[in-house]
Image (tube, rainbow, N blue to C red; front, side, top):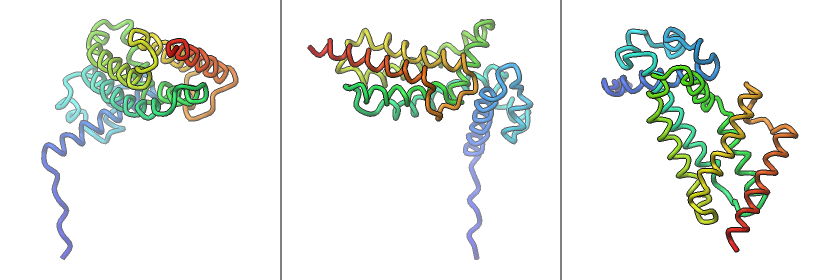
Length: 208
């Protein structure tokens, strides 16, 4: 006789429900935006009742903050791959910057942008997001330090990371809905090439 399916434990069912809610929240924020992402829309997408949602998250804001933390985890893991590779020549840096562009323009990172824009006029949301935002920044800085720490002074790495990420974030705001996997346009590619040349020049200066 076929073996009966293994029943999930209560903890496994709880984790699966929370995971579905967080994934649905991230996707909804990226596709629909902050204002249109209601708990009803999230529950419909996740296949979870609103009663179940509020058993795990007391408020919509609490759910959004948890989704921000989840999106940060995803972004860090993807960025870890983006940072891999040779960074001592223009071609290597250009490739690294191209991969970072995909991370910043990704739908998952769009969740961050939606929440940060909303937090500009919502002090409670801004304060609630602060721990996740600081953790995300520190983890990204750690990746950049691992990549560039032997060729740039530690004090300069945060500025370099901020420069790169903010350039790409600016592209996301100026061209919403851009496919991150599509090749950069002519102007964007020229900017990436210029950044790569500037970074390698700086490496050379520090190496001497």
